[in-house]
Image 1 (tube, rainbow, N blue to C red):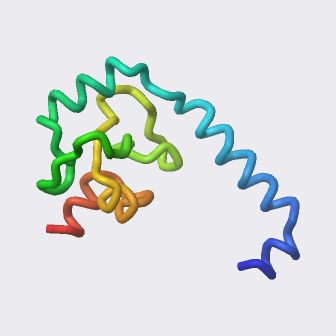
Image 2: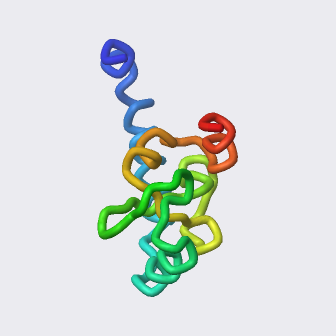
Image 3: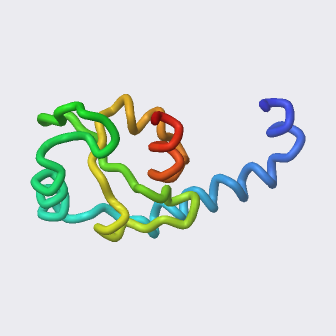
Length: 99
């Protein structure tokens, strides 16, 4: 909450730095990796039957904040609604929830 953040500014800075470092470690995969994922998934969302077209999100099956990496084996392409609903769940947790 906002009140907690105001009372603990040093903890908030620590959380922000940790989040920033985890994102920096994740990196961005090269375009050929994304093209390969698109081909492998037949242009479909990894979690639902939606066609991706040109609009898709690059998803980490195990989120960066939960120890995931940007290794191609941890990446998937998802439609925006699925990726936004998945948030920080793993792919298995999300698939179990929507089943």
